[in-house]
Length: 403
Image 1 (cartoon, rainbow, N blue to C red):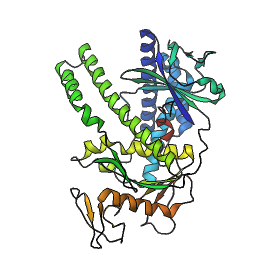
Image 2 (cartoon, one colour):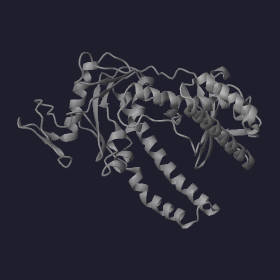
Image 3 (cartoon, rainbow, N blue to C red):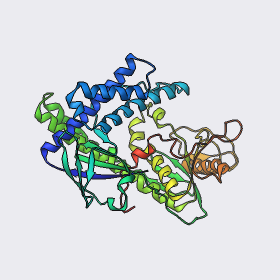
Image 4 (cartoon, rainbow, N blue to C red):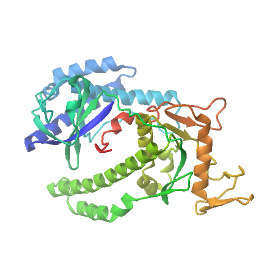
């Protein structure tokens, strides 16, 4: 599955209709969550029946395409199923109890409710919401795909406008020649990553760079009264700055990950739990700014695309263990050089990258994404690509066409 994204161009009345469709989608989803809360144990079929009841009871719900209503029900049920799954697996901390949405930003159609023009440059939404025909602006070419391959169409609202996403059933793998190289990566805050060869990639720190501009826009928002038109305009400008920073971070992680994957047959990296790391309030901003999650996401994506092996190893003791003799040398965060009793001296991140690669070599021969835990009993635990990041497909929607 691949996702192609286009900028949607239309009239102001069409944008208002899109907002109405998004609010209706949110209404259906919240109704489904409330129905589940009041009737524990209901399944997806019961929620589908609820969708029919809502369409019969509310005219604005009936105006939305039935497949879009079903997609909203599926969104609600996916959050319910994820909550039950986390409870069964005894996930530590919060289990992700389904919550009501108050600022939904997208509406999703299945195979009905829309039609493409012959040139594939316009899309027309045929339900009664009044969205009509929208022009598609982008560099992707939909003529390469059959209409039967388009499984979903999603309208997304962002700070800088509206976008149309196409979920297409297509093989995205690329045949490549083996390079005979392996590499281990140790991500950090000072440097974006340090590999097992000693190379370091600088950390661009997009959020730190744009923080001055963000503070200026936040002060502009605080000047206006809540609910006023000027405050909405100020919020939109603030959102545009945040959107630019997130896009810069995503594009950087994507480009670096692609270069790493194409240059090596095996790439090893730390199996970090970023959600837990950001609980440290002293480092949370820097960790989020580094974009470790985005980097790992794109490593796994390009690993599948180019047929490379990606291995996520347990990060325990990779920093403190000596890559030369194996002795454990404890060090604080401020200690940037690894000095061992055996006389081995090296940068701490370079030493950690070598240890990561050594751990990963135990899983060679397995194509895909594998998690290696040296402390686990028996064979190394493994997870196929795509199962680590449950929303991997939905997040691959901004790959540049020239990549």
